[in-house]
Length: 320
Image (cartoon, rainbow, N blue to C red; front, side, top):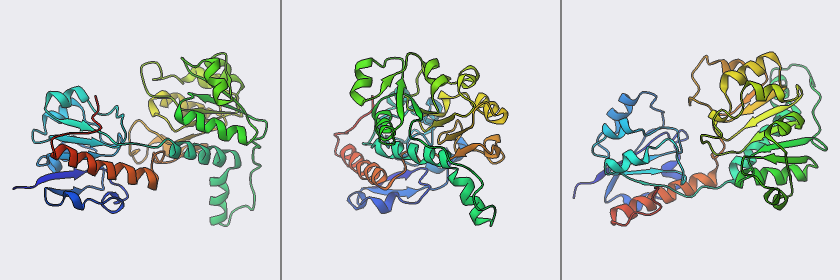
């Protein structure tokens, strides 16, 4: 029997076939791994046109209707996580493509949020750069977290974990989202802010933990950033489109806010020469929120299980 062909896309760390056991598929499937991101759709199509199965990492490579139309051999698309806004699931169904997902942990993005917040508060990157370049021995004065206000936009799985760490640091934690209730806030041990505006105006650190949707897209723009304190910091490990990028660039350039830490971008990887790469008060990481050994082990182990189930005629973890 002729083997199916499976492509694994955007495996930046070349870890997919090392962190999970793909041996159960060897008799039925040939696996090819692509480490480099395909920024042009035509190049992607040329590389995977002969594949019946494709495994993708989160939203690194979008799968719109136009792409499904160019991949008539594709039968199974596996994404890490059980939600991927970059996949046109309706188009997949129309083209006879089954879409399956995997489990994903909320701990890694919560942990990264704190890595970024702490790095901002204590100027970790700037002091480390100075150390390596034999620069000034101490050039900054850190910000104490004890007694500062942490404002959370979103109090779901990730936001609630971030809230508990804030409380452990002795911070005054407040939260807001369109549907947040006093009862839910009290359940997590935080105070519900009266409004988004009130949260922005009174917080020393504002961290975003919302799902991208019509109500959250562009939620933070120029007017919202101007409401923040000039000594305040913004952290976004959620989705880039929640914050209007031109407004953030302007705020950081003008010093409207003290700084920001961002792990998500409208275009990934961020192009060379992009203005975001030049802002001294921006701490940026290349979308590391979900990138951890435990998450990766889950993603690729369950990707193998998804493929096995599909080949057996009983797909599991299907996305609707």
